[in-house]
Picture 1 (cartoon, rainbow, N blue to C red):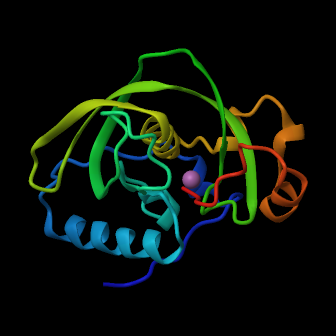
Picture 2 (picture 1 turned 90 degrees about the horizontal axis):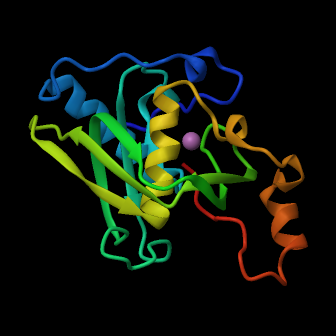
Picture 3 (picture 1 turned 120 degrees about the vertical axis):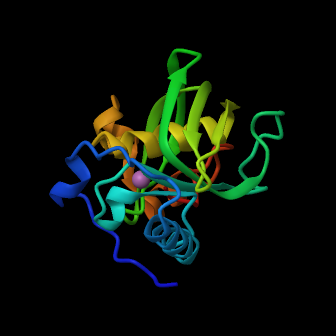
Length: 186
Ligand code: NI
């Protein structure tokens, strides 16, 4: 196991459309997934996509913490999970605005409109199909991570740049509000 170097915004690997993986059971892929999980946990992230560690392939890891899940049947604590070649389908319009961070954009948070519910489908490392529906934080994380595979970073989804800034400043300014910027980054 090893901690991997995380690409930061500005590195071209983050703008590339990542390649599909022909064999999810490949042993090298398993090692990469283990390292990605270790790297995500070390950085206190909720998710990490392979392009973020300079591998332009379609694999993501994520975890849903107890403090973030809404508790809905399709938004429960889980993980860390691995999804190979994930695909999502928006089941609601992308109008649920929430704070996001990204391990490739350290220290910053922005408000991004996402769909409340998505359908997802991918493969695990045994090649089995993993599919279902997700809402709440799980749906947001899946949309954020799959965007990484298509070369999209969350600021590219933003409409209101007055809701974009350094977490430290946002937290200070919004301490009195109920919805505080997320403490986890993906
Ligand atoms: Ni990210």
